[in-house]
Every structure is written in C-alpha cells, then in structure tokens.
Length: 145
Image (cartoon, helix red, strand yellow):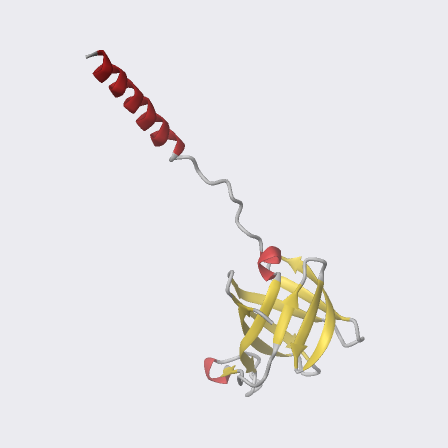
C-alpha cells in the first residue's frame, strides 16, 4: 500500500511539472523588416509602368526569364550587391519600417524602395526612379547565389 501511495505521489508530481512547464510561452521576438532583408534574393517578377498611368497594373507584371540572374544580396553591415541589369555595390539604410534607401557606390542616383511584401521567403517592393519617376514593382524569392 505504501508503494502504491508513493508511486501515485511521484506520478502526480511529474504530471504537475509537465503540465506547467509545457505551457510556458516562447519569448522569441518577431523579426523586424531589417533583419528579414538580410540574405540573398532572386528576382522572380518585374513590373514597369508600361502604359505610363502612374500605377503598375497586374497585366504589366512580367516573370523574369530564367537565364537572367537578377538578384539583391543584403548584408548586415549595411552594404548590398545589387544585380538588376548590371551589378553594383550599394549602401542601404532603412528610412522607416517599409522604406529602404539605396545609395550606389558608383555614383548613380539613389533610389527608394517601398516594401509591399516581406516574409522570410518573399520580398516585393515598388520603386520610382528615372526621369519620368514612373513606378516599377519587383518581386523576389529568398534563395542562394
């Protein structure tokens, strides 16, 4: 009888311990946009404002040909390799939680990238650049170089 009481007490303590330790909340902070950007991104779609109405329409968004290796690689130190058309080194900063500023080290005009979507695997942004300041949309998938 003593053995049964002792076994029951030990079992109750174990169940009590498991119950309360399994309910502990994870204190993992959500990733901010700056940390989500770090890494290598392969371009999947590009959408210029072809009809020049000031907006990129769904039918203006085109897939990027597989033989074009357009990409951006963001580094923690605030630099990036930007390969959209021609390779360039970039210094990037977050203006706010949804805007990235690219300053090209070769002297090209800086551009602002307005983040539309950013997850651990997907990135899309809109930029307005060039003389006509027409918008373009770019979509990327996280990958490897």
